[in-house]
Length: 271
Length: 269
Image (cartoon, rainbow over all chains, first blue to last red; front, side, top):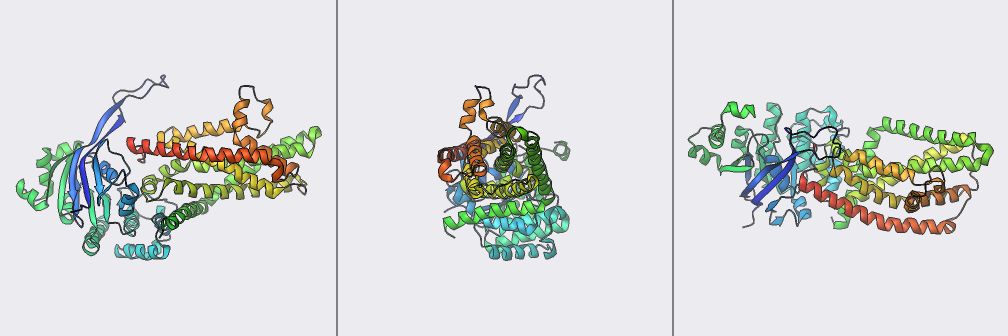
């Protein structure tokens, strides 16, 4: 069976500026002290076509790094990532044709309108402009973004409206693997609901495979067939929401999260 | 869509995007155009002040230097600030994960850059000619623009080398590109003959494509020389372009790989 996504022992480290040891200001040419940080620590998992797989964890746990490894934006130190059987390092062009991504911050040319940004994306993905406009229009209408907003500069749109355009941009290319990196963070309840409903819809109607990172446990419970908990770059537990709740004797995933990580609310908030 | 059509669609996408951005930032475009025109006129006025020394030729020598530097620096900036601009907008990851070869990306940027710089230069040229009432009847204007186009190829290559700096260092890279630009200005015949440079800098000027572009355009616009008369400069510019573009591409790809390995592509570095 060809998995939609196979991550095999993915490992990624970074050097970060060491906040505790500063370079003296007069040593202009000296290197700033740095420390090695392990962002993703030998993570393995596989996702079947058409599945929605959630990766849940607190801020800084390695969720976005994992998404970047899958989306060819980072090279792993070791390990392997396959998208529909294509190695993301060796067959990056094929992989990029199969995926698209929505990140936590809607990355756009903010002076340009939604339509101009979407035209740009359509041309990069080799789409006919007319077809792209129609498809993106359908998606934006479905998510409740009024058509009069499509030609306004994106800087004049609210964060929720921008995120809906970002989702239209990612999904108009009909990706087989959709990477949603905290797509509803910071959205109002109505926008959040619109986005969640649409994720369910594309899964049901188009059979798209979805990787969803989130720290919203209720959202993941609603959308994902399976979830994994990640902390400090390591997967701590994986399974269906129901199986995880049963295993840890909990009624919701939030409680499972605290039991899996061994942390309390206070400790989590302090971080 | 075939691979070729996809590449052309993407190339056009970059041009269309840059044109849309130019329209949205039209206020700034006018400011830079006025600034560029005033700078060129100022240089021309310095020449006019010394007219007694060499007449219209002196004015033209300086004007062409200022015009060409304006052209080459705009082109160089468009290429070298490609990465810095996208990082500032926050779109760099989105653009870099699109199914587009880097050569297509850079071709789109280059095509827009050359067109934009040519149009801008033509406008400033028109204004300065009218201001100084220059007699350009004997000038080979078209030939000069053809030389500019050929000289652009080398500058695209140099721009690619500079574009890698913001990839290597998100904080200091954009500033470092100005050092390269400054060196190109110093070691060329923009405002003076390279013979007035200190001896140890002259070899650098002799490798600088800007020197050859300036010499050839001056010959075309001041003496009315045809392309056949400036062939040694054109051959050098073509050869330099043939070397610098692949070198620039290779350097850029190496830089991109480094950024993907170290996580420097991310917006905040």
